[in-house]
Amino acid sequence: MPRILAIANRKGGVGKTTTTVNVATAMAAAGKKVLVVDLDPQGNATTSMGVDKKGNMASSYEVLLGDARLTQAIVWTEVPNFSIVPSSPDLAGAEIELVDIEDREFALKNALTKDAVNYDYILIDCPPSLSLVTINALVAADAVIVPLQCEFLALEGITDLIRNINQIKKKFNPKLALHGVVLTMYDKRNNLTQMVEDDVRQFFGKKVYNTVIPRNVRISEAPSHGKPVLIYDFKCSGSQAYISLTGEVLKREKELIAC
Image 1 (tube, rainbow, N blue to C red):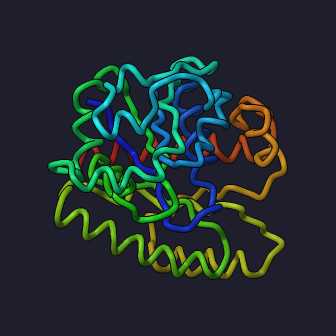
Image 2 (cartoon, rainbow, N blue to C red):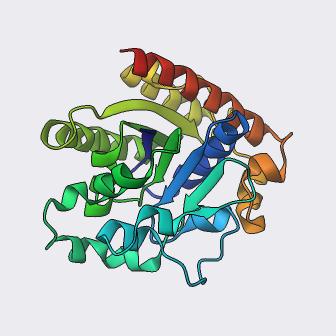
């Protein structure tokens, strides 16, 4: 079975999608076979990989509700070893439809268990809320990567998320672990950035990755070209940061699997 990592934060605009597609790209470049499941109704991961959301294709919505097998929804990207299950705007109403499904919190886990054996890693891009869709992602996941924007209000949201992770671990998924916290949109010229980093590292300790993701215009430009920043501009500071982060993720994976 593949390792399943959810990229989650209840706050929007913190770099969840950017982290998902670029870590997946770096993993694929390292020879890992990677599947990204786009569970955000906005479909930014889908757009970022140049997949046409208007196409007549199965999506994570149908997979979640059991109307399509995972294998029917997989789309191969231009990056070798990297495929994606695209999003659908219908995911916005999925929570209402899931309510009447038996074991609704396990819908995604059951779908992934049936069809995902050929992948080394599955990365789930979660919506910015603790909806039933996000709960499905956390129930299916082995661990959670939390992107955290370097601003004061982001600290408030992360404490709620950690509480939610612990609740899901206790009730639905005993193996669920906090993989790590990655600081995003990092601006070393900003005093607030340093203050936030100090607070986060003091609170989470070694769970905070050493690598920080800088504010970088190339990261912002890449999705409009339908490419991860590693493909759009390999030499920019954002790309190099995501390569370093992925190295940390894979190293930490070996430690978690060994435990």
